[in-house]
Length: 77
Image (tube, rainbow, N blue to C red; front, side):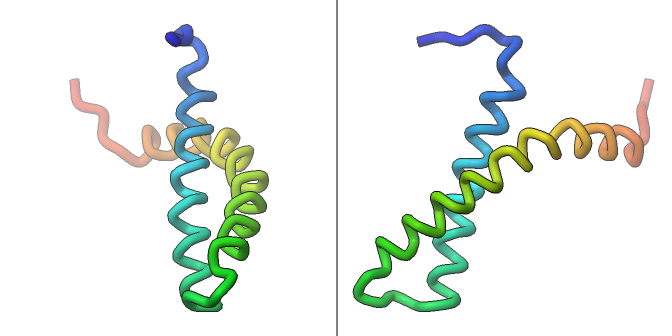
């Protein structure tokens, strides 16, 4: 399935939110509780919460981050 290029920022935000939440929730659960018996359930709960919060933040922060990067970098001709 192919999607129109106009949806690139939204798809990018969704994929970035998913991957970042996946890795960060795993790391935070390992650090906070370790590999306990119900680790997968704790991790899944943390991942879902993180995805619900983190993905909209990624979608909103990406354009701002792009503007900041453009502002602080030197534009060469």
